[in-house]
Image 1 (cartoon, protein in one colour):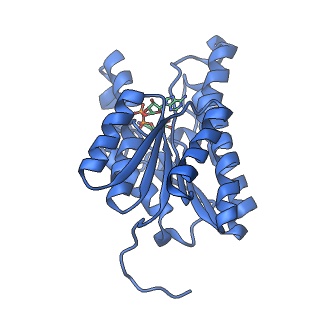
Image 2 (cartoon, helix red, strand yellow; image 1 turned 90 degrees about the vertical axis):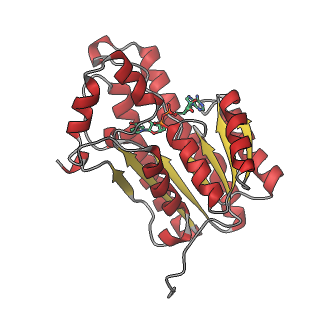
Length: 258
Ligand SMILES: NC(=O)c1ccc[n+]([C@@H]2O[C@H](COP(=O)([O-])OP(=O)(O)OC[C@H]3O[C@@H](n4cnc5c(N)ncnc54)[C@H](O)[C@@H]3O)[C@@H](O)[C@H]2O)c1
């Protein structure tokens, strides 16, 4: 289908964003709302959720918050039901919640920490897509973006549960794309490099020399701003990326090019 070069936004799209009050999630919520999407912000942080919804509405956008623990299938199902009951449909999903469970070598990692890392970073993506895809199939299409990490492409020491889970996000993204792209649902992933959000700033606080090491580890010479991840996600969610599916795209200042 030929298309001109008109700008492609997210007008009228209904979008869920998990981890929606965090650094990358809130940047994506603000950007997508500014491009016309109605956003359902899902997170465990109720206070920040209320503040973000207020900011989006003050800027003229449309947003709602629902407290959602992405490790709970009931919560994830309720998030999708909420989007449909509030806005009548679900067009787009940014499945982005994630945690760093703490740094540990494999030999020291407890089964509890492993299970928590896998649940919040990977099982969550399965649960989200399990409940989002049926609604999108009913509507004849949709777009999903899952958040992996550079740690989904290469190994990093001291984070075995995170690295395994983020590689898993790449795998389930490709599996889902193969299953549902023929039904009009595009499924992609972004692999952020180091990004200036609480997950990384907390690590810098514990180990101040880490900032320089992380910055120099990225050929571009700095870490990313969350808005740079939001741009990639918003593009993948929009029709501007109409032929992109099953793609797992590094947005990492060259980190995984090395
Ligand atoms: N910041 C980075 O350097 C970086 C790099 C690569 C990948 N990522 C990934 O990007 C995503 C977003 O992270 P961020 O950098 O914005 O960090 P962040 O800590 O600012 O945001 C994470 C959000 O997830 C929410 N969350 C945590 N547990 C949850 C749960 N059980 N249910 C629902 N929400 C939950 C938190 O409340 C927070 O709002 C994560 O998947 C992370 O792994 C981040």
